[in-house]
Amino acid sequence: MNTNTLFMKRISLLLVFALALLTACAPKQEQTRVQKDLASHVIVIGLDGWGTWCMEKGKAPFIKSMMEEGSWTLNKRTMRPSISGTNWAAMMNGTPVEFSGITGNENHPTFTPILLTEHNAQPTFFHVMRQVRPEAETGVVCEWGDFLNYADTLCLSYYKRIEDPEAHPDAIVEESVKYIKEKKPAIAFIHIDALDHMGHAYGQGSAEYYAELPLVDDRVRRIVEGVKEAGIYEDSIIILTSDHGHYGTGHGGDTDLEITTPLVVFGKGVRKNHQITEPVIQMDIAATVAQVFHLPQPESWRGVPVPVFE
Ligand SMILES: [Zn+2]
Ligand SMILES: [Zn+2]
Image 1 (cartoon, protein in one colour):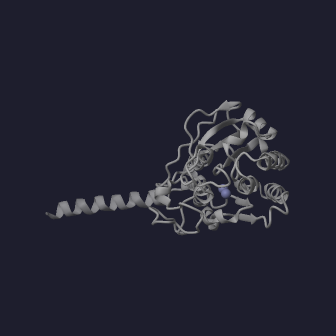
Image 2 (cartoon, protein in one colour; image 1 turned 60 degrees about the vertical axis):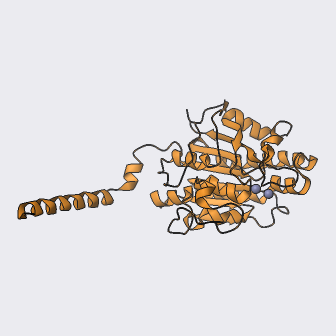
Image 3 (cartoon, rainbow, N blue to C red; image 1 turned 90 degrees about the vertical axis):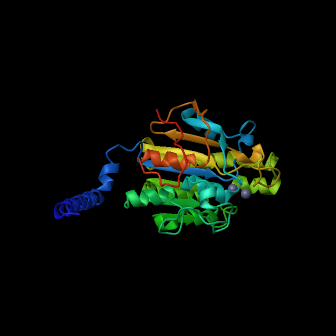
């Protein structure tokens, strides 16, 4: 190699280095904010154990009005196994179970995850939001605290667990509305456990489950009222969904009753009175939340944004 070639090599190396430095220093936030957000707030309301099976005969006037006001499917697939932890995790981390190893309610993966963040967790939409917009307010208000194992609480601005929700069924509404009014979160997840409890105690199709449905429906209504009172309704997208259904007094299996769950999306820019006919799986919710804020999808995500926007 002559001196000249060596010199040229050094110059090109320097150029590559300078270019890499420039790219690293470029304001990533600016880049991602070139496109306007579809909305400033996403409120996800998760009804544990809300199976599609109950919607035909069940009394849920508010949820049915949300369907008319927005886009919906009663044919969303849960992840296997049809367990809460697996499905709330996939809703937030957009990742196949085969990658995450989150196969149940345990606080650790069953097998080695394919990818972990610096928090030793899966990259949830909370994680991505914290990375891209460190100042964004994100929070969880929940009745079942175990799924916090998968939310990456280090990336949350706020979380509140309702103690003894059976004794205080209205606390979830009060605490959620208080949080939404005070902090106007960019992303909030609210978890209501009552239907799952009825499913376990009395079974799929039981009178007790059907009796609980309108009560839960009314809690959803009051949370949405809270979003209106907070003055952010016109700039919000509300996602209502579930983790799994029931078969008998349990879930975790592969029956249609367990793996078929509803998804309702409504709010700013969402198509009205629109039945989603495309196939939807639990992971797609993470992709949809990311789409609202133009957040980049981590490499392990496999969800597809649900086509609900006008
Ligand atoms: Zn559940
Ligand atoms: Zn359950």
